[in-house]
Amino acid sequence: PPVKKQIIGDEPEEDGTFIFTLTAESNTASLNVMPMPDGSNGNTKKVSIVGAGEYEFGNITFTVPGTYIYKIVEDNENDLNYDYDKSIYIVTYVVTQNGDKLEVNRTITKDGKDANDVVFVNTYYNYGTGEGEPVIEPKPQTNNPQTGDNITSYIIIFISSALGIIGTSNILKKEYDN
Image (cartoon, rainbow, N blue to C red):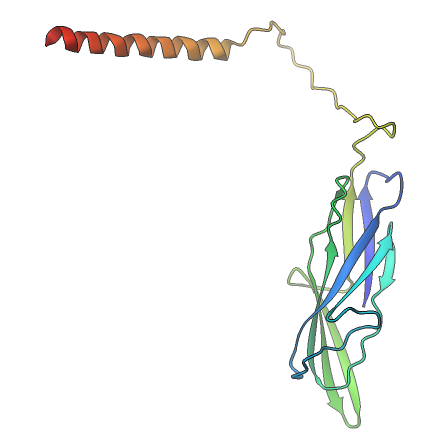
């Protein structure tokens, strides 16, 4: 099955490399080893796409009727400028015997909902100016004067002091009453 990569958001300064994994999940054909595309490593195959684009995992050859289920995910490469698509695609092949030939019907779901294609969409955020300096967003202006006073701290100190005085007077009163 083909996998597609789309990038939205800011324009990347250079194309990133994105890795996708196809994993054989299960089958009803009682096969110990599920059919996989050429170049697979056991029950997985990884492919990469540089920038936005499309890549084909390769053909899967079925020899026995049954239902074959595969999962496709995008590997998170921890590039902090990208918000990676965490979608999970399930590709199901139902292989039936029709006379002397096999017929294959493929369905795709994305996070449990029907899908037509396997498309991962990442959002790119340009956090820098290109010169190694971070972009600092200006703080919104307010009409309040900047006095440097922190009235909240003074209120907390006042209340704490008042409670301390009340607590001390109650202790002294108990001692005086005894």
